[in-house]
Amino acid sequence: LPIISKVLFILTILLVIGFAGSITYLRIKTNAAAREQNYKNKIQSIIDKKTAAEASMIYDDETKAFNLLKEAEGLIKELAANRPSQKNKAAELQNEINSSLKILQKINMVKPEIFADLTQTQSSAKTAKLVIINKDLIAYGPEDLFIYKINLNTKEVSKKEHQTIPYLNAANTPKEQDAIIFLTQENTIAEYSPKSETLSSKDITLSQNAALSSIFIYSQKLYVADVANNQIYKHSKTQTGYDKGAPWIKTQGVNLSDIVSITIDGDLFVLKQNGEILKFTAGDQQPFNVSGLDPGLDKPIEIWSYTNVKNIYILEPTNKRVVILNKQGKLLQQYTANEWKNPTGMVVDEANKVIYALDSEKIYRFGIE
Image 1 (cartoon, one colour):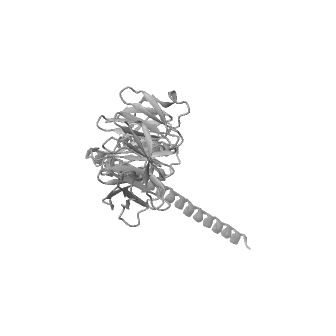
Image 2 (cartoon, helix red, strand yellow):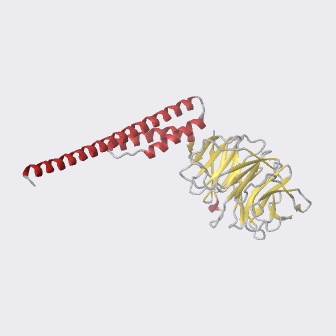
């Protein structure tokens, strides 16, 4: 080719390269600007949600405030914080969100008193649960052949062997305070008499292949949660124990296979292993939602309330806490302690604003608001 043609060809190539480079540069710049604008929009959205949450807290709408803060927290996780300044801003916003969440979480770190140490009475003690009758706490467990009585006034600890009725797994005291009814891992029922301090077997007729996980006595009737038959049965008292009973749950399609605890205050509340709480009235399921609780329940083990009790109390070893809800499911307080390792038993004295918690053979006592 002539020299002029070669020059023009090379110039054309250079112009094409320059044009393509300009387009690429503009595209990169546009994308960077879009990312920057998206980042700013998310920052503003986080700030707006945080401001709205604080306004909701002022007007005592804690559920709305909690949801807004969780939405803001989700946006913080979506931030593409690459530069140090962006990372610092994300951390600053997260700290502000955490401060507001702590107010809503209502977590109280208590310094509990060691009310009793069961190892001082029995070095090999292996208790798991607590129940109360009159002025005595009773500690027991499926792997311990003794029950331990702790007097609330003197703190004196005594023990009683129950080798002929082993594997005590759950218990409940009726309002008459005349006995404690125990459930064993072998699906049998036993009765503890506070007068004679003896434990005796009681008859009960169960459905085929029954597997009982929890019991509760209300109006002289024994309610048992049968996870194998996906039902709660109501048993009437007989001279030797309890009759066969009748299915109590009427609502169809309810999954009761993972019940860990039940309690009754007129309505019946079911606590499930997955943290779900169900409410039933006369056997029919009612709407019930827990609001404001963070974190959610993780493998809770006990729920308790009663007719003359104002709130609902839940024990959850995973997060080492006692959760207090009102009867509508709204979070009121959470209590935890550094001393706790794995709390497994709980007795609530709401009238005197005291809770007893069993953890690693020690019974702790602390006050509540």
